[in-house]
Image 1: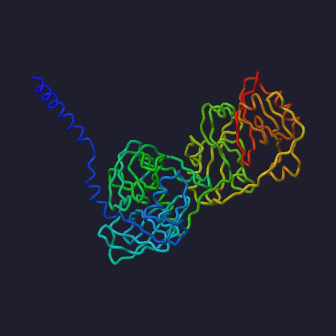
Image 2 (image 1 turned 90 degrees about the vertical axis):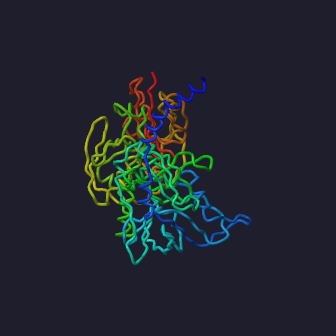
Image 3 (image 1 turned 180 degrees about the vertical axis):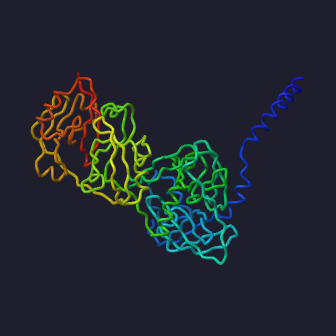
Length: 463
C-alpha cells in the first residue's frame, strides 16, 4: 500500500515537472544559427624570459589573467614564444572580427580558426586597452557568416543569456545563465573606469575571452571579458562588455585606428549618507567633485570642487562610478549638459567635452607650524608658499594632530584641510574661527588633500 501511495504521489507531480521543463528555454536553434560566426583565436608573440622548470601551456597566461583581481595581469614565466588562446565573433561578411584586446596584445601573428576548421591569418585593425577590445580583419573569397547585434541597453536583470567560446581550447562550448546585474564598475590598474560591465552567472573560463554573449533572440548583447574568483575556479561571477559600447569602440578603431573618449578633468568620489546630509541632499546620489584640474574642460565650463553632478546629458547619476561611463562615450569637442547641486541649490551648466588624457600629480611633505581649530579636535599648521606651489593649492592648512569629531570623520595627521563647510581655509586662525561658528549637531563637509588626492569627508560638529 505504501509503495502505491508513493507511485501515485510522483504521478501527480509529473505534470508540474513537465510544465516547469516547458518554461525553460531551448537554446538549440540559437546555437545552430550563430555558432558558425564564432571563431577561435590563437596568437604568437615575442619570446619572454622564464624561470627554469616552468614551461607554460597555450592557455596558461589566459588562465592567470582571468583569475586575478579585475584589472590585473600577472607576469607568467615562459620558455618559448608566448601564445594565447581566446574567442571572437564575425561582425561583417567581409571579415571584420571583434575580440578582447588582451587576447591579441603583443601578438606577432594572429590565426583565426573558423567553424569549418579553416585557418586564416588575421590583421590587427586596432586595439583599445581601456575597453579591452580589438578589431581583426581576415580576407577570404566568399562572404562569412555573421552574428546579429542587439541592444545591451535594453537588457534586463534576470534575462537568460548564452555564451559560445573555446574554454581551455574546447571549441564551440556553450554555457548559459542569467544576467545578474548591469553597470558593474571594474577599475583598471590605472584606476580608470570606462566600461559598465554586464554581470552574469554564465560559466566563463580561460579561452572564452572575446566570445559573444547572446540573448534569447539570438542577438549579441555583450563580449565575455573576465571573471572574478578567489579560488582560481569559476564561482558564478563573470563580466561582459556591453555590445553598444563595444561597437562604438569598434567603429572608431575601423575609421581611425584609435579611440577618442570624452574627458572633463575632475576627480570624483561617492556620496555617502553623511556627505549627502552635509551637502543638503535628501538622499545619497550623484558624483561629488573633489578636485577640478586647471586648464581643463571642467574648469573652463565652471565646475567647482564641492559640486555634486546629478545628471550628465540627460542621464541621471545615482553612483559616482556612472559618470566616467557617460563622459567617456561623448566625442571630444561635443557640448554636454551637466545638472548639479552647488551649495544646496540645483543648477545646470553647458560645457565642451575634451579628450581623455593622462594626468599626474607631485607628492608633498608635511611642515609643522601654528595650531588651531580645537573645537573639532584638530591641531593644524600653516603652509609655506613653497608647499602651496608643490601641492598646487591656493589655500589649506596641515593637520598635525587629530582627535574627537575630526578623528571620527576620518581626518588624519598629514592631511591638508582645504575647505570646511564650503569655505576655503587660508590659515589656522581662520579654521578656528569657522569651527567656533558652526552649529552643534550639524554635519558639514570637509575637503582634505591626502597623498595629493582630494577627498570630501563628513564631520559632525560636537555639542
